[in-house]
Length: 195
Image (cartoon, rainbow, N blue to C red; front, side, top):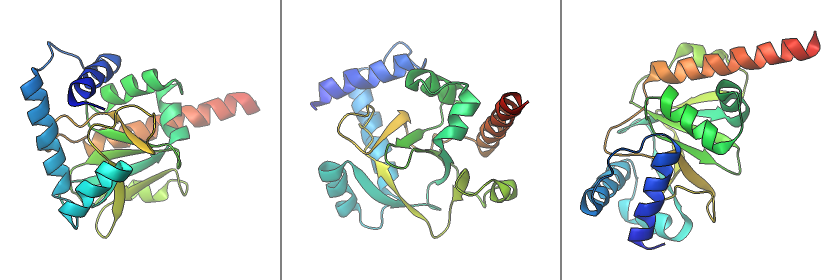
């Protein structure tokens, strides 16, 4: 995809998630994309290999507990929190609930990954059902999509809430609230269905 076409796709994604503004100039959007890419690459064990992997596979292996950590959340829990599984509505919900914090989605694993600041994690996340939510910090690596992967066509992972700049992460409190809302809404729906 050409850079101008990708910038148009970026703007479309921002409009779809309710994050569109006056719209950055082409130079500003390109600069921000490159800044975000370089910032992500600071978590690579091998920057050159990560760039090659992004170019060839669309995903690069990056380590957590550097410039960011992540929280992996199963799709069912996110959809329960959002009250829908319609992609555009889920994206808008995530953008609002996480205050624009970046989120990408793994199509194979059906999992959302929320980038959060480096921190020790939340103790309460360890009591969630296995596979429901997992903090990825020290000694963890994960595949991260290239910054320009904004649509699900031809990729394994893509950004549902795009990374807009360096260090713009979701707050740990907002992620905890999203997880709690999903658990509550799912339990309520199961209770209504069973009763």
